[in-house]
Length: 157
Image 1 (cartoon, one colour):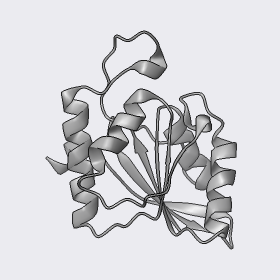
Image 2: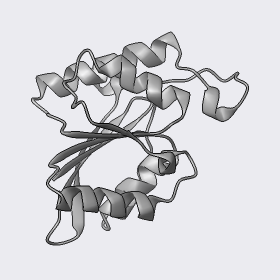
Image 3: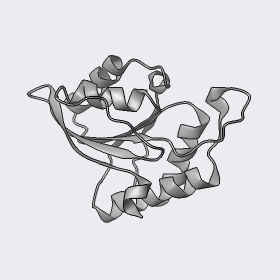
């Protein structure tokens, strides 16, 4: 099973609350760039989990045009910045057990790095710049994954 973990695009600093911070224009364009790259690499997605926070929702909306996504998209309240990485990893394993092969997760720092570390015991939690995507190849039979790659918009420039 492949799990693609994406940090939302660059967000504005000012908002009524952290949950309401919108993407900047740069955040939208960098997210689109990453979606285009994923498509050129031949990656497919059969399930999407996304944070309820505005910037994550807007990241999802920005990538929809350039990355084929399934109609089933789940908003997961556990994908907030302070979410529990163990719970997220357990849920991802359960999705794999039900047959999903390519899952996209759109969330926040520090959770994205901790989820990678939870899925890949040999890896320390990596840092994620905005719009960065990491790919974990997760072996359900072993209950552990391998971090295959991590790509940021600046890598593609």
